[in-house]
Amino acid sequence: MVISDNTRGLILAISSSLFIGTSFILKKKGLKRAADAGTRAGVGGYAYLLEPLWWTGMISMIVGEVANFVAYIYAPAVLVTPLGVLSIIISAILAHFLLKERLQRLGVLGCISCIMGSVVIVIHAPQENMPASLEEIWILATQPAFLAYVAATLSVVLALILHFEPRYGQTNILVYLGICSLMGSFTIVSIKAIGIAIKLTLEGISQVAYPPTWFFLSVAVICVITQLNYLNKDWAGQSASDIISAICGFITVLSGTVMLHVTREQDPVPLPGTRFEFSKKYNDDFVFGSCTHRSSHDES
Image 1 (tube, one colour):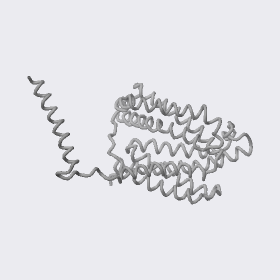
Image 2 (tube, one colour; image 1 turned 135 degrees about the vertical axis):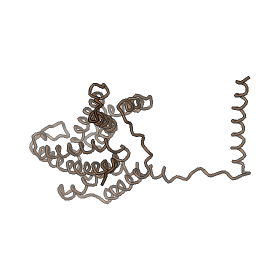
Image 3 (cartoon, one colour; image 1 turned 45 degrees about the vertical axis):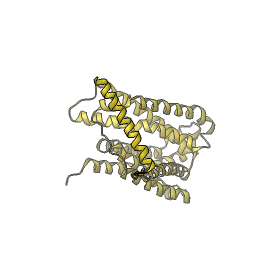
């Protein structure tokens, strides 16, 4: 039986969510133990680095991220990324049993909406043009539109870190979630590029001496370290149910936007003889006539 690349990516993405969802709970318990013995991570403490349970969660997260990393090699990002929502559902279930944190009805509704939204995104996702080389990704990454997105995103991240985090980080969960989510967009692009570099290297086309390989690797390392740092602060200061509810609420809004776009009505077909049809025909004739006149003028 031959397993397609998309199926392999699907299996790896689901496995990744299992490991990552479990790692959140293990790290949360480790952070709680470290807070009882020393300074809490949310106020700058690093006592959790001496907690074995936290390292168990970290190893579980690394395994999950590696599986997620490999999934991007086999399957398009539009299939792998939405499946990451499963880690939220797993964390919610484990938090209920292991952390004794009761998930509110709104959180349950959010989890259901997350699943529905992920299914809608995967089913109705546009066909993705899979880059076959680092050069293609580098060309896309240096387009003016993407560079403008990078500049805008980094500006928001710096504002969150320098201005909002010292003032509202301990009371508003969205500050840390915003930093991690925005940096995560760069992580996905970098991981995709690194995955292609590894795949080409294994096929005999070495990408080690290619500068973009090290550039994307550096971006991935910086983004992952930043996300881990603020994610630990996030988990140390909030309950799992609060975090899950906030994430589910965000994804619910996103899912609703996608569903509205997918189910929107198409533009009506104008009936012959109507005012709209006459106006459209007049505009078409005007444009066509202008083009014909210009073409005749150029030929003369």
